[in-house]
Image (spheres, rainbow, N blue to C red):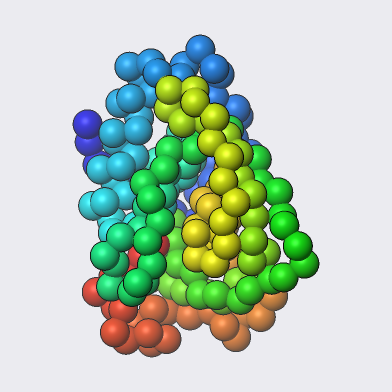
Length: 179
């Protein structure tokens, strides 16, 4: 188990699509180690989520969790391991919200995303996951899954005047400047 370096925007591998994790790797010792590294890395960086490509692993695997985070008061998202995810948009509603990213440290940008989604995939043991979520939970899942397709949140922005340094835009969040 180790805290691994987080790749930053501009690293070519972050722009590449990830490959599905083979089912025979579910429940394996190698997957368990990767998940331990991801969780330790996410926690050490005070992140709400982490995608495997952010630590140099080009597989379709994300983790996320939000609890007792000063950046997201009152928001709770259960710890989830999501392998080979598929996202379906539910309805037409879209919401704008501020996002940050561990691969784009110190920055925030406003991104408009579908407000309600259904996501499916598998946990680390191969058990199916099927959830319908909205609000911040939906945003976190979409943000992390974008990494699996080589997309970072600034690429989703439509108004670059809503992009800047966290310490300027949100001085109270400066000690917690990454996501």
